[in-house]
Image 1 (cartoon, helix red, strand yellow):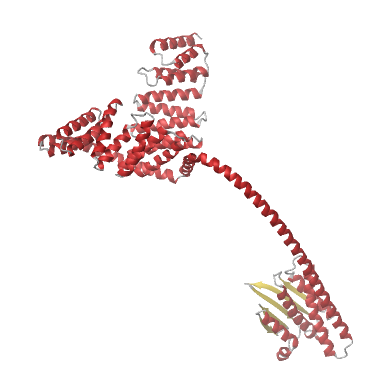
Image 2: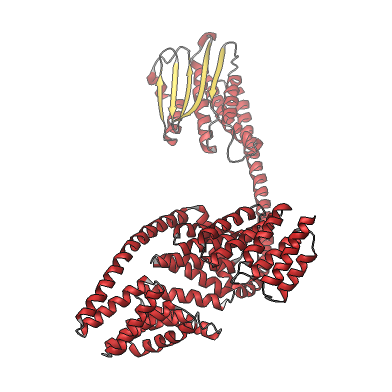
Length: 633
């Protein structure tokens, strides 16, 4: 306990003596720390206080964050440790100690992964990517940004997702991969517009203008840079407005509009000094010098170009040094100062050689980034990100969607009413149709029933008539006619008894027909056995009736002629379908056909042939060891 009191006493004394008062908030945090026991509140207060000293010249942030981490470790406060690591990483990043910053950002991410707070993790990942970007490790930066982007989009944080998209766009812009860079900045711009972030819109517009400038599309560059410049100026961001202003000057210079170019370049030169931006000062000086040289104002041109070179040299801006040295070489050569021209030519070539090696590294990095992007784009994860980005980019239409939703609801209500009315009408129509179908079915059953009854009456009349005939041939003919009528009557009987009026069970019908014929000729199964192998094939009503008539003739013929003098035998009936062809076979093992010519002349066989033609079938006869009729149709 005494050790703890000593630590906090040292902390309070250190804060009072070493740290200047930043704000009333800082004072309240220090007071809170002095009053609290060891708990999460102390850790949170230390972390918030550490954040307020990011840009102080002493190491206040580091000391406070380390204390927060120590206390959080003691009480096992993971979230507090993650914040402490984040503050330490930011402390080192601001002081350009990037390797240390990377170590603490990674520790912060690892600690935050246990808190399940994906937005906090995304923020640290974004900072990790920015640190890798500063180190020039674009591949690692891209991976960190992509992870941050996914987390932010998953949580619907479109505002911060827009900045991450912009960071990715900057990587590709640095690598001169203008198409990919433009894609990301356009997505950024859409989101910034949807959330009315003017600062973000201006930054995206400025970067898009820079892309078009790199592509030498000066017309588009002027449009986007002017929009960016106007927005930055309207919201009082003077220093941020200088980049689009500089690009406006360069674009006008490329279009040979020297006066317009000079207006923006002189503005940049003056205000960049107030903003302490050596890059823009050097660039503006050089381009002003180029304009003076083109106007033959060589002394002014030399002064501006030398200033550009010296500023670039002082701040180690190699690319600006090389460009300035090259333009000085061109200037001195044009005015005949050979020694100076050679001096700056050597400087330009030397820097160019150094930059060539760096360009090779950049090209390799660009290839690696392109490969990484292709892999990412082809993955399901990137597809998901693209879809989410597209959704968040459409947030600008929210107010229109509200009106559209109201109109849509009204239309939906109308549609529901119309659909319901249509449903009621269709149900009524269906009910009427069902009633009509039921009525039709009843009528069809009645028709089949009456046809069956009428055929049965005809059959009975023929049967009665046969009893009054003395002529055996006439009597025989009448009975055969009765059997034919009976075969048709059975069909109609099966139809009105069936659930389906469009077809009947062919197997049942043919077996019943054969049994009826056996009874009609008073043939017992002890003397002539009936064997049937009938597949349950589907036939139309007309075809079934015709098949029934054929079987009637063939079985009748077998029963009358194949087994004389009470000879014992068998009649076989089969119907099958093979390769889409129906085969009907009626055979017996009786005495066979004595004279085929007599068969061809018989009335029954002529009926069979006539019906076969109607079925587009072929009938064949074998009369060895009995008789076999085979009909294919």
